[in-house]
Length: 472
Image (cartoon, rainbow, N blue to C red):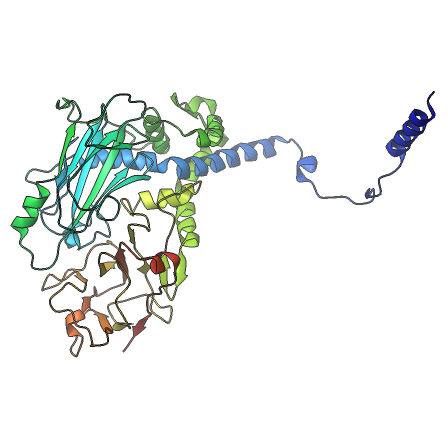
């Protein structure tokens, strides 16, 4: 035998039988997987926990799909007569509000702004649809293109595409064909989209002129043919069904594709009977079903807690970023698609919200507050401050119809150095800045500071909003 090979073989053998220099034979690590017995009780508990855990994940992943399917059917249900503040429109048509939102609008849109005329359109893309926009002469407007996951795929408007006349094609997945040369192509992930628009209105403007501008926006199919469908397929009836949410999620999944990056997660839901083919309850044990039912009560709390932990509190104001790209933050996507449906990403607008004063106490109409600014916030469009009741999330009812404060208002007052104050209280104040009064409700309330087209210092967090100080 070759001496070199023999020595090598002995070395290998020695290594195999010699204890490792890193071995810790007396060290025992706790390992519950090795010590948990397979008792009937443990199996039952495991099935319940599995149903609960999968239910939480399925809800926080799939809620936006369910919410959008429900919202779309709601928003194409146009009342007759249609209120002037309603933005609802028939399927594949643009629906415009012809007046600003009011306290009565809360049922349709919680935390509605009082700055813009809203527009809504549910578009079923059986073929590409062409969105035409007029020249708004630098007036702020934006139309958000949401897919069925409540993800903002495109912006059309002052910041993103300018205010000149234009045409944009909403193209469904898998469509192949040619578009007119003067049309900008906008590919979307799902074959239904929600267009959510805003057109800025300044105090005292001629409504007739604004309505004429609204008439310049149009939506039509590429072929020019009118889609004979005026309704969407009804969703399943789920009244008194404790697992009805999953029936609606299964319905939504039949009409919307799953991203490749979500397939591994979605495959886990087969254990609770949820697949692309539907929702099959027969695969679940009673324990799994018990856990699944319990998950529907707690899943919204998980989403809310995620929102709270994602928000960055700076001097009492809660700022949320990341709405242009949720990534894998499904709970954040869920909570935004719920009470904050239609919320825009920070490139377009930011919405810091505030519930407390500088001492950490809940804002209440029982007290008077002041917000002191050294200069106006750095934005490229405009800003406003609005108050809402905590219970109904509605604009505050006032005698003079004032529901916000912004620098375009005729009564708005600034000092020569650019500084100003905003009184925040139930009763109308006196003094230098009485014209800047932001009316508050009698009870608990919160405020939202809207910054449209925020500058870089706002998006980076360099700009900080001032404190809300209680003065009485």
